Length: 391
Image (cartoon, rainbow, N blue to C red):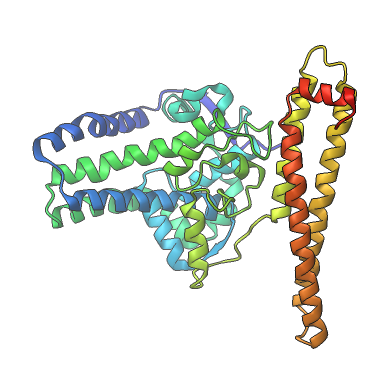
């Protein structure tokens, strides 16, 4: 296996000074400045604009477009995500993607650049401050073929200064802010917010939250981190399905990155949006729920009906899988009919297929309600029900 990351313990003074300076300005100097001078509406709006814009450039561009190639984009989109991505001061898209791809390939190992097994602090920011990483770019050859991406990588300091420092300060001054106020609020405070929001995915989301789709992955779904990072906090889903352009797959989950990509597709600026089938996602969720109950049962001491309980769990899970497959089959049958010409017969078949889908969906919901009740049983209640034969 080719090594893509080699790390040695070494203080990165450039990063220590940069992160230390911006943190001092954001947490100490900026509040003092605002207390003495106040803050204008234009400064608030510009802060929100640059924070949201640079955050989206990282999530939509660096992460979902470049690191995972979950969709294709028009050159206009490439320019904007590269420009505002540079404004975030999180390296070039090429280097960011190279490290992130290594993270997925070698997750939780020594070759994972922000390996959570080395501790919360290391995964959050320690890996940038006290370790030197030799990052191979062999896993991002596809990105370097894009001339604009390659230009940003080769001239990152220029892109970063213009987009991340000069432009915010210039707009701040033009709308009535002082140079110092614009630098404090629109540059340093924004840097700290965006950086630590991004870093929290590597730390918080690999230590706290829910394992919705893969109970053994260190990656977790964390709603608050999702709020801070435009949807990136649904990290268990992302590690289970990294090629999906969505992270928040449920309709109510906060994922502006997903909405942006889908919205741009309506006007032809993004295409080939990759998404995992709902049935594959549901199957993964059912498997995780079964494994969670299985591990809980195996971990119970003095559970005399363990073998029967595990058999019943397997049986109930198989029933759910069959119900899900029936629904999936009904949808595929309908999609096949849609491809046929609009004859009277095909219209009748379409109505019949829609009816099958509705019935299959209702059956799945009914069985899933029973499944949810079943897996929520305490092992002692399950044992009691097995003994009296009521389950």
